[in-house]
Length: 267
Image 1 (cartoon, rainbow, N blue to C red):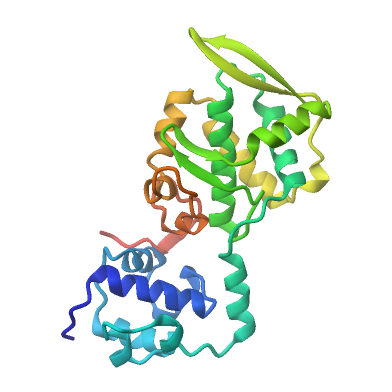
Image 2 (image 1 turned 120 degrees about the vertical axis):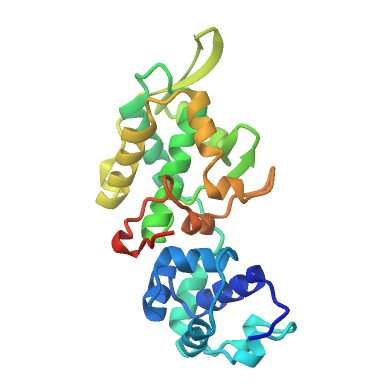
């Protein structure tokens, strides 16, 4: 099919149409009979789409091939949304996350219960444990864990409003801030003075947090910062701007946390 559209433009249109139809990448990949990683690469513009796949996509997503390949194609005009309820659901899912303050406090306390005694766990490591807990949970379940927003800064992803929440927790006697030296460098640490309310954490949430702790809590600040800089959500974001949770769905090994089993195709 002759077209002046780039692979990236085609991929962006497919991704937008998929979201408008209320389909996850996994659901659409199954309908098109390709692997989820293949669809990911397609949406990123790293993989071309053959004419048979495009025909399947047009039937599933409800668009005209002629309209789709037009330079002036508008996604909100070209797609036929048959299930308004489902479309609204996915729109809510990808909306701006809302901070769940009580959940955030309990996740923070739970991580500190497990890790505060480790000499490497200062602010830098703590920020990364929170980041991976939030983004891993979103990738796994397509729901926000704490709803915290993270900003891309030179030393890694940083949760916004954390200072305010920590100050509140210190005033309420939930945390203690400690200034120490670690290998000759100043370090800020936090010690939990109360246990997390585990009734506020679902089993799935606790499981994701535990995996992050097991994998990363022994890493040095330098090592975990370097690792976070290679994670696609951080890489794909602009300096100083908010990191979009949706980017977690484009992760590849070793960062992706979903088990796609036989879906992974040989390169």
